Image 1: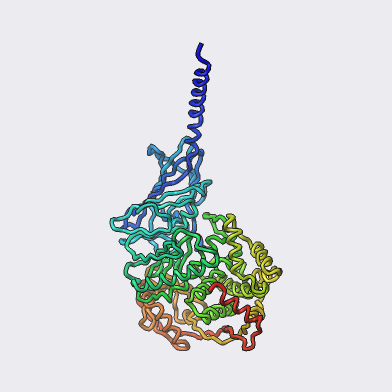
Image 2 (image 1 turned 180 degrees about the horizontal axis):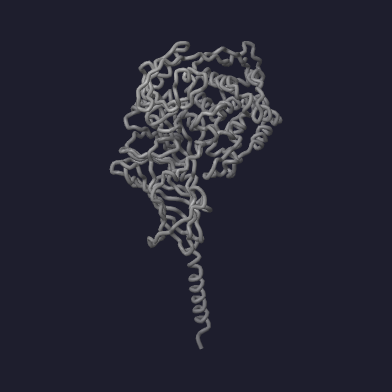
Length: 603
């Protein structure tokens, strides 16, 4: 008979072995779903990326893959699938799998019995724009929305991206870098909100709060080293001013992508991302740090406002369709306001410049007839109709929100006896909504202001946000001891919109009974010059020439159907009512306290 002690040991060993064998498959099954991407420059001549998505650790019978239809921040549907060539899917053995397209840009893949598939396609990148991709002989640029697929139910899964580029090319990406060619993202939203540029460009590195910041400028040599150094100093000051509001900078690194050239579509200007922004600026010989810092200040504040502090309708983003929200007057308008406020707090603008920006927003709203018909909330919702194309009758929620931002800031300071201001609203939205993984509503925002001021702001929102009543400027600006004065302003009108194209500016819409219509200009005419000033390379001078010829004419050269044409274009005067803020000579101590709180807090 075996020894009982030995028998017990043998039995325990057998049970332990069985237990280990029984849990081994479970351990394997718990491997996390992830996607390894390879983005290669397949052809600079044909302007093709080759994208490979190695989808691993699949544990479901069907997998739904989709490509975004739009890029957050640029509110137009682009349907990036139109640029895809040779889309195919194979299993781990290389056997072809035929997916089923169940919606636009969405594929259903049968994955029963498969734990790994490979998706491959080419992507034609032939448009340099904020929401497009481009490959040339010496650089390539894209944002993740154009190239990366989302796997349904795996939005929070990590990804790795490896780049294959021609010899000697640099890589600058908003993604987290692990080696010279490999980058990572913790989730899909970070992956697609991270622009990448490869090729030849200038790079200026600087630190803010011990975090690396990178200024990427293209073409190489377009923006001089001295200008880049000065601009970096200004960017650092803006970052510190904004960071002071929220208690620091919410990223590991930040990248500023600048193209000193014209965008090749209507998507020009600048566009914010999770820890970067992309901007188009005038050619480097014309651009100065002082000229481009205002846009930079606006885009940097988006780091918090809209990238993190986001309307509930956009949390999370639905990349398959338009995401309408009544709160873009906050997302963009407050960002306009803080863009100017940060420049003032950073010492880059004077008090007079900041006050002029507040008056300019009043002029922009009250000088537009549409303000009596379209509320800030409604203009926010309707942005998808005409974000980058003209509409017959509209008003900018950027300007409407900037105007309301100043009025709310002053009202909160006044009503809280200086204890709070708009900064506190933004901090609360950041802490109580972003950090808790959710978006905010109009009612959420009103509740925050009510708690800070111990007053009910529902009436303010009813009248001036969802309504079209004229705000009580004299009363609210009077809190800080300012009078609001009307001043006549004269501007020019030629009666046409202008659109950007790869060939240069082009006539968009021509308005009835306008100077442009009277001389026979048409949509699609390619603008060449004004009195000898080239529209493509000397646009600031061309516009200045038109403005100085109010009441007279300019010699406009353009092309139509390949033929050169010249007309004498009248420049009509347009009289508008502008506004300016004047300090009251007899401001009360209370008014002076509000003024000081408004203009000194945060400096």
